[in-house]
Image (cartoon, rainbow, N blue to C red; front, side, top):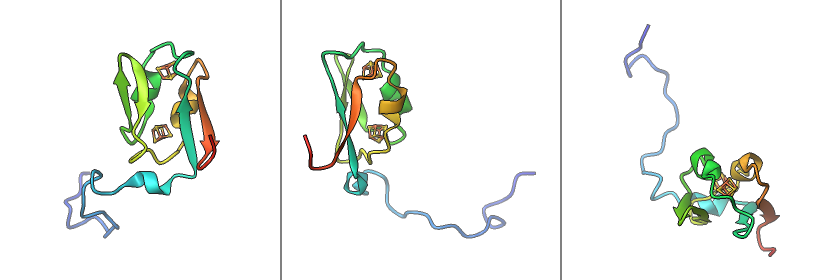
Length: 90
Ligand code: SF4
Ligand code: SF4
């Protein structure tokens, strides 16, 4: 049965939109795309939970302001052309 919002227990929620929360500050690992190896399949773009990947001519560009370094894009890339590197390293 569907509950009304008054019946749902209190949960912590943000009162600001994601565009205000710079989630990139959370990042420990950073995805780096090998543009030469990319097959332009768009799978990384579809899987990114933070909508931090934009496609430019089919090739992903990471928005590091919002990418929180979860690594899903690197895991899902079938061509293994996204690697996670420690923040602060090349
Ligand atoms: S590491 Fe996570 S948040 Fe960052 S671009 Fe990849 S899937 Fe998106
Ligand atoms: S999943 Fe890999 S091959 Fe596909 S677009 Fe993304 S980086 Fe390129």
